[in-house]
Amino acid sequence: MSIQKIGVIGIGQMGSGIVQIAALAGFEVLACDQTEGHNKKAQVFIEKQLGKLVEKGKLTGEAQSAALAKIKWTNNLSDFVGTDLIIEAITENVAAKHELFIQLDKTCEAKTILATNTSSISVTGLAAVTKRPHQVIGMHFFNPVPVMKLLEVIRAVQTDDATYQTAVAVGEKLGKSVVTAKDSAAFIVNRTLLPFLNEAIFTLYESVGTAEDIDKAVKLGLNHPMGPLELCDFVGLDTLLAVLDVMYKEFGDTKYRACPMLRKYVEAGWYGRKVGRGFYKYS
Ligand code: CAA
Ligand code: NAD
Image 1: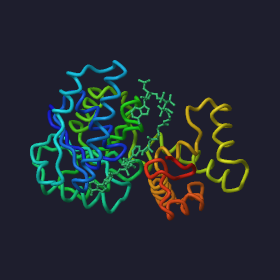
Image 2: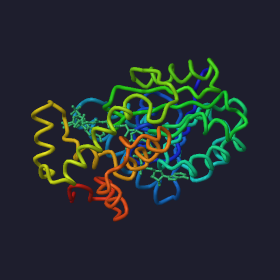
Image 3: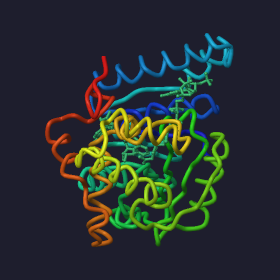
Image 4: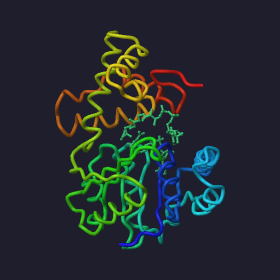
């Protein structure tokens, strides 16, 4: 299927990056967050990111204007009629995603493919709440979206070949290298990453090292670009806890039990960089 118009819902850290790369790749983009205030904040962020690319000489002023002209904003799901593909990037919460997919399924034309950027939630379960389960798929981008080269494409058990091929083609047009993952909680990358990040939090919880030393040790000892606690703050502690809880529930294995320190920080609202506090404080 030929995709011209992409809808993105949830314009936080991930959604803003998806909107940016989709507009730069020449798609018409309709972006939607919860309120006009959320939209405005995301719009300013995207304009700033594109401005940085122009300053660095990586984008011309004309290409910046062309990309910005491709992006339209709304807070109303009824405006998504006419989109060929919708990529959902709202908070990692099963009930909220199910509710959104039910609404989108009612609102959108039969042709529209519904994709989710979930980090862990069953794509098969999301497909099952719609009347178009064969047109539901996982498109899992990585943070920061404009920089990270990977896209995991996750087929629900109901996904048809045409939907799968379309998602792969869109991913490639967005400049990503695509891998295909089975619909198993947390897919490939997060299945391997989350136990590592959780263990780093336990290492801090048990005072094996300070946060600074744990990050320094992993950066210098393993050549990682970021320490694990820095990466936790970067991803969002709320998202990490939600992913671990899905893994724990799905696999029933205590190796996925979230560190109590992570749960406590999320209860405190210390979600990481996006709110100014996580394992570190940000100005
Ligand atoms: N948005 C867009 N571009 C960004 C960016 C952002 N948020 N942050 C950094 N960049 C760009 C910079 O502009 C810079 O571009 P140029 O080379 O063109 O100048 C480039 O990335 C490198 O940035 P910096 O020099 O500022 O910093 P750095 O070298 O330390 O790199 C980083 C920053 C790319 C984020 C790097 O630290 C890194 O790769 N960290 C690990 C990220 C990672 O593991 N992501 C996956 C998280 S897990 C996930 O996404 C899945 C999930 O479901 C939870
Ligand atoms: P975020 O908290 O930065 O952004 C979520 C956005 O969704 C917020 O702007 C919020 O206002 C909006 N939102 C919530 N409910 C909504 C609704 N019903 N309608 C419209 N907008 C709504 O989160 P994020 O880090 O961008 O993560 C979003 C999704 O992407 C999650 O499913 C997460 O698991 C996944 N993901 C995150 C990362 C990461 O590193 N942060 C990487 C890959 C995938």
